[in-house]
Image 1 (spheres, rainbow, N blue to C red):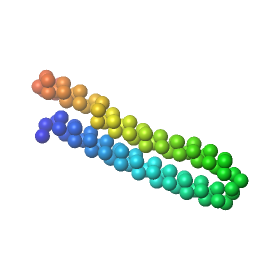
Image 2: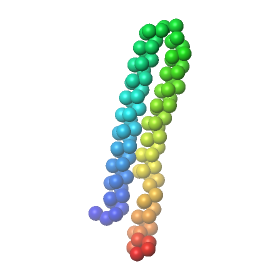
Image 3: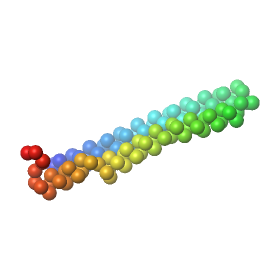
Image 4: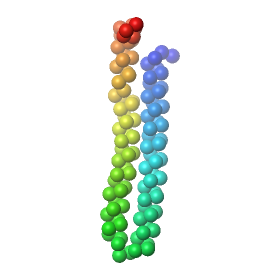
Length: 98
């Protein structure tokens, strides 16, 4: 296998790991936050509005982590800077500086 194949395999594997961790981590965090919020609302029903508002802000911040991981995965697959280096190497026939 040549270097472009290895770069492709590595990019896809790295984006898969990034999305795997980026999906599981926020999902666990959101589940824990929701559980704690429901427990707090059950103990103090009068504060349900304040707890819900704080919960939604927290969930948005937790979800942004998953979105960042998605963006990183898309960059690794479609805008990988190593692809340009590999294409230039193939066109020229050798790596720069060799």
